[in-house]
Amino acid sequence: MKMIDFFKRPLHFYTVWLAAMALLAAILALCGAGMAWLLTGLIPLLIYVCRPSSWLHKIPVAGRSDWKSAVTVLVVTATVAACILPMNQFSLWNGQIPGHRNQYELMAENILAGRLHFDYGDEDQLLDLENPYDPAQRDEAGVYYHWDHAYYNGRYYMYFGVVPVFLAFLPYRLLTGMPLTTYHGTQLFAAVAILGIFALLKMLARRFFPKMSFGATLAFSSAVSIMSIWYSTAEPALYCTAITAGIALQVWSLYCFFRAVWVEEKENRQIGFAALGALLGALVFGCRPTIALANVIVLPMLAAFLKQHKFSWKLLGKLGLAALPYAVVAIALMAYNYARFEDPFEFGQAYQLTVADQTQYAVTLNFREMIRILNGLGENFFSLPKMSEGFPYLNHGGAFVNFPILFFIFGALRRESRNVLRKEKLGGTLVGFVVAAAIITVMSVLWTPYLLERYRMDMYFLLGILCFIAIGFWHHTENDSARRSLNTAVVVMSVLTILSSALLCLRTISVYYPDEVRQFGIFLFG
Image (cartoon, rainbow, N blue to C red; front, side, top):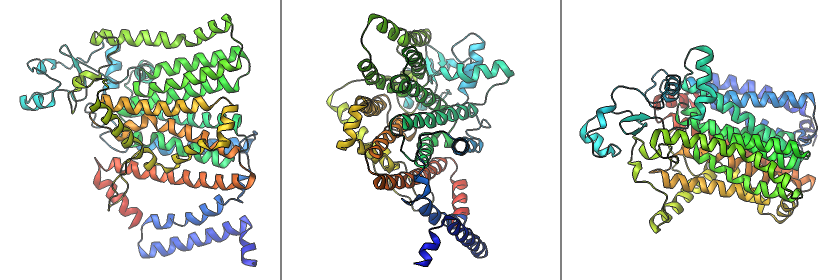
């Protein structure tokens, strides 16, 4: 009993733990073992810090203090650094071997030159083909072409969203006279997305479940951020530039809408935040249209807002003004599309020069497509990956398999949670998150030949936000003892989510750099 009492004092535990870690490090150094075995010494520290009676769970997220702000800044900075600093490590993605991945840099130059197409000088190579979008015909003819571009009427275009050009690449070019290397744009958008996730979850916690643990909130925010961004860490240029820009704008759009409906009390401030949310949400269509489908969540939010206010024509006019950015951005994007493809609704998806003939894909609902959709939903959310014998062991699977922390979402089905959700008029919004994730998956199935892991980035952040709300109301409806246990589970699962994200990131890197990942595994495990 005396030994147990000894370890109940944090200072005693940390002293013994540091001594044990030093001894373990010396032993492993003499044996030539890998660094990962040293990291196993963190396990008892994690268990001790996260135990239900830990001080970590006694500090609520509500209330402001200097030390809380300092810890938050530290965790946010560490999360951003972990996601964006490794982006410059590999030549395929850091601009050393640009290939087709520098389209955003070139698009800024195109706009400055007053054109919307790329002027490569070899556009006529595909003119003699009956169907230049058929990869088999291109291979058989042996013609040179620019991979993953849109090709229409003898010209090459960028089918990736153009909004990031105006947000980052063009301003940087005008200010410095130099092109912004594409992965730097991804770093910027990833950082903004992470800041948005932390800000949104903190606001939700303070508004709806202020007794939630400060430590659990920070741990979960970091986990959701890394879960949402990790793929861009592995392949930052071009594809993830558009995706991270879309995530950043959509997260901040949701922040504005949540604040407008449930935080702000003055009507004019509510309308102001709603208008800003509409602008940011509309711009997502010019980054990554599939992510922009998350704007469907605004509909139940609007319904909740209307339940809080007495209807009047004046209020209707204000709401119309708040929604105006959707119309303005839509008109601008349709004009941009028409100028390129003579179709206001064509972003260039159908004219890609890629692994399949995209002109054959269309939104149809016949029996065959319904089967594809059902299989796609199962694959995107619950598919089981094959484990690998070699490092990093994990392979890409469905969202709930990659990140089991998402199973907390089902906590929203508890009767107590449903009652509080109904009281706060949040039930419809949570359904909106589920519907948005499903619609995004369906459109990915219909528009692409197969589902890739990076397509799941379109919805990971939505599932993370939904999961946090479910956990928060579960926490809100429990007694103190159950809350501490739930806090422990959240922190532990958050750590496992970060670890899973790191391994999946290494798996993605190993596609192009297998030797480097293998050497890293040797460094870790000897």
